[in-house]
Image 1 (spheres, helix red, strand yellow):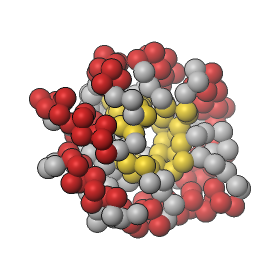
Image 2 (tube, rainbow, N blue to C red):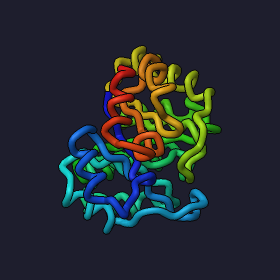
Image 3 (cartoon, one colour):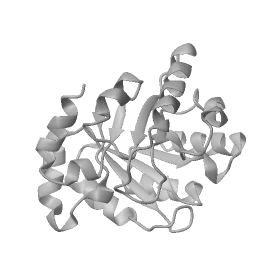
Length: 216
């Protein structure tokens, strides 16, 4: 299991302390980029990612919730990203998605595709042999602290079954409402990486990560 805490929930007045705790306990850091247009919220720019990069050797997993992922993929690649994940809903066009996936790979980064809860898994199946990461949103993107949507479990199994049936190698990541209450079920249904924001950062980071580890 890969644990990928979302910096959206970090307490930035304790940045050094919390980055140190992450460096000692997890594999990835999830970096939510919101532009106030694709989703109704604003978050981090590349300068914040550069600061994290200077203070961590962890895999930096950048999730673009923006209307222009083509442009921002370059911006965050230069800032130190290890992966770029963008939303299918921006284009709703397989060929355009493939072009961006190819561009991300040309920058020597992992490429990922994500869908909102209301988007059919069927829509992105033609892309799953081309990506390194599939990010399943189990809440509506844009705000932290939302409750997990149980419908994500069936969607997760559908993607996992498709991966097995076609002998594909992409990682499945789940984002939204992840906690020690549902982590075991998510892993059992095929998740490889769990994005946990509020659960990890609300309280002692090391203790909360340890609770997730017990779900393996």
